[in-house]
Length: 471
Ligand code: BG6
Image 1: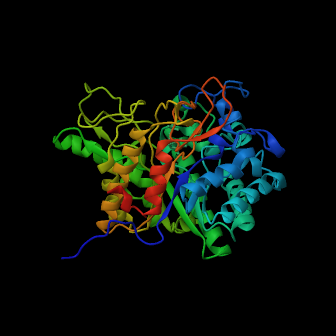
Image 2 (image 1 turned 30 degrees about the vertical axis):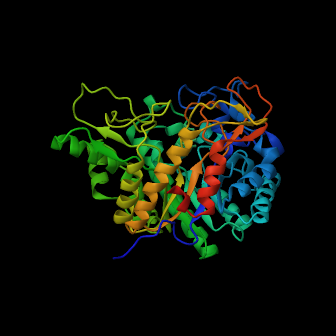
Image 3 (image 1 turned 60 degrees about the vertical axis):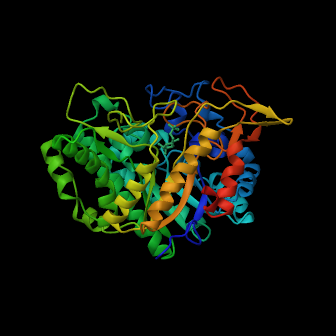
């Protein structure tokens, strides 16, 4: 009988994922100007402010801008073979629409890449992770304006030319489907979301999709070895009941997210989306050149996975589950302290589903548990006894391994926030994901010292054994 290995494939990439705005700090250093995050002190829970305010934890982050060498050394100690980080657009093109990049911003990421190289860590770079330059948001209304495609192309080309010999894996937009629900955070759209028309929202999405395909071509033209991926929020939707109308509701919910992957992988708009747009009275401005550009499909599909949710046509069922995407709670699942429902099997569902749908290699570039941690002293050493995080990690990786056994081509796994960072949705530091605790609190107090949690050693053992330690 054929047996299936207890380990992941040879060369599987193990690591962690971050985003510039959530941990770098130094929000005006070396020529950087404001990004949208610098005026979002409460994440997506409240509207942006006009100017940065002192309660915005992202302004200082965890001071990675100055501590990156030590932090990357800790990642190396964890055994990382890959490190996902984003480049802050507003460090490279501080306003976003300049002709020339900011050399001091570029030099910072040279130094980061030096450290990765020193430790033999493969970089995985997100070009745009929820951090559109504020000037582009306020002046152009972000991606609603077609000129954003040109600004983004110039930015991405600058990155490929500067770092392309050192960075093989690129992601175009973090969680591109989040723009459906959070147009400011994911699309730099300054118009408040309750005033934004469906027409403008979908036109903005179209511009992002064209920009993503266009820079995929730019990367491949510069160096065919470069691998460019899309990045979507993977949230499987289950019907709440066997009522076929609930099944269809779940399917429609999934289509709204599939559409982004379909365009990225198939190079054209799917029929179900065209119908849905027509029914919403949306008429997209799609040029012939756009259609040609969209044919530049991605090399791989990456995604974040935190939870699943349920859908129903019954309006009496209260919503509640989910983060950005909505949905109703699944009565069979438990939730994190922030109400995100924990569903390891859903990860296997997603992996099989995406592999069967798109046939492209997959990369889990975010997965993790945000929890309140308590720093304690054990044998004179500060640590966190985070068995709940170990359990989450283990259960999800077991399901990922099952998917690999099912035949899914999986490139790697990067845990979200291997070091505590500021939360994207709530802008708190108390929503901690890390294997490394950072002494900084929601009120801004703390020494910024780093301490290894119990999960640090566990993840290291999983990586060292290429997954065998899960059993
Ligand atoms: C994803 C984002 O939505 O989830 C990250 O890509 C984010 O930026 C992560 O931090 C976890 O979400 P949160 O809101 O708990 O930080």
